Image (cartoon, rainbow, N blue to C red):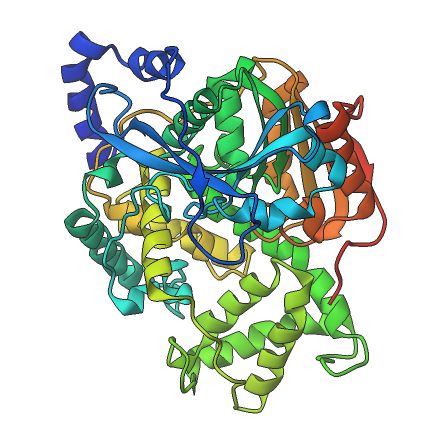
Length: 506
């Protein structure tokens, strides 16, 4: 059954087809050669940056179906190659999110790159459209909707999605009221087109990239839209680029991945938490899971006041969200164990410091716009309730959250185009690096992306836990494999597995 939004799309597409054609114009516009103005590099704003980092602005169409219309500025940064005599080209860092930027990451994460990589490339960062210093947007959300356990769509303790649907409508209304015209034009495909404008402005015939998490998906989309402009592409902590097998929708797949991802990581946490020591939760790993589920259910019934916390109380969903957050990096295990131990006694640890509100407003506006504009979402509360009930039964740790309604259930803007389908058409320039146990980008989703790319890609699976594999929570074998590819172009002949100890431990 088509949603109301889909029915609106039929009318809009029919009206536009006579002038634009159904899908060709956006692709053709993206592929049309652009002669950019030379970039005007200047010292970057901000503190703690590498003194070599410089910044510029690339002007791009706000709406790629109207390339002669209004322009927005995309903030771009650069640290030149440290050995110009061996310089190969430009390496773009594509941040996760949606809602994250890499403008200053070239002075942070970029400086962790091995010397041979920093010699081979100019390091390039950017804030995607709507983010940071690239025409930032905000929905002006109520402070309560900024709480992490609220914008992650956790159902009510009994599994009801009624309040989630109310929140979805409130957030979508705020985005429509306060977000401005750009909110209609923030999507993964638009991000990929902006990247190609950045490539052209840099004067590069081809571009190399390191895309992390959501950035891996943007990198895959770029490789699909502009396959012959890819040099060496590393996609790290990969999302299922064509949507989960239940829905086939990219936006929903981003959330759905938490089901398998959390299940993949929990046994590692349980094993760690059953070892003797300060954070000992149980005598055996098998006891940790029921302990956690019982505690979450108790907190659903009897929340504990939490003075100073933006949640005001420690309830079951706050505990579940703390679990998800801790699983991104094994170094978060102790904080989760501390929270569990305190809650068992009816107490709470010191309240965590929330991120700055302006940063949250910006990041959430871009998150909502990207996931809602990327693909169709159901509008029926009955549909969400059915899927949440099924998810809660199969994946009790995540309690239905990955299948619940977000603002996309009430998103006011019609879908402009179908999601970009990732295929095996194009040159073989991609290396996927993927941790075996990743809470947000599970191995199962990465394997789906790998299968879709066919001979265009090779995947290295790393026997490690956490999100962010290369130079993060991976291991030395995986790091060497990625570094070798970026520095020399040498890539494994076939998919490979990197066993051994994790790169980081609690």
